[in-house]
Amino acid sequence: MKFAVIVFPGSNCDHDAYYALNKILGVDVDFVWHKESSLQSADAILIPGGFSYGDYLRTGAIAKYSPIMKEVIDNANKGCPVIGICNGFQILIEAGLLPGALIRNINTKFISKTISLDVVTEKSIFTQNLKKNQIISMPIAHGEGNYQADDDTLKELQDNDCIAFKYSDQFGHNLNGSVDSIAGILNKQKNVLGMMPHPERACEKILGSNDGIGIFKSMIN
Image (cartoon, rainbow, N blue to C red; front, side):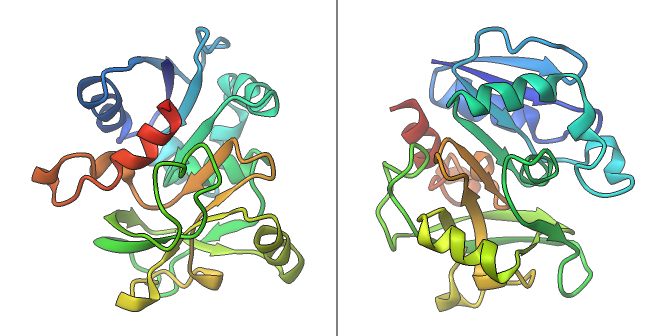
């Protein structure tokens, strides 16, 4: 399996993603610069965290116009697995691959903290190695991770089993104000995942948790 890790000016988790996929899991990974127009026959796509274009205008708003995004959208619509993490989640929403919006955290501050997540569904290529209601741990690091959606969109996500992860209410970790404590969502076809927490930063015990590796192993399997 071959991953493409998209790199925008301002990406800062691209090498973390590369390390987790290539050095820990042993899969082929290529960095793909945002100005390129080919995904180099990738089997899966990862859009990493960071501050694409310095978060000017609105997070992800400029990145969606990068040339490579046409290929990302085309491949996603053909069923290619796409995971967007933190800023990558913001870009996927701006590109129209996922519904809703990500706005400023409810406390208006940047939050960097290890949190707990509830696995809401195991019926996706990203969560099939996890268990429904399993509690996993990984870091968040964002200023605009407050997921919001109108009532109809929220109901559609719930009805189609498209909520992948929630901030675990058991430990009071919905720090950003997201509606229904949502931390990650899927598209209807379940081949696109956007999530604010960072699984690539939770792939080795030395980092405090290796729970994130389950998401990447699910994709590989």
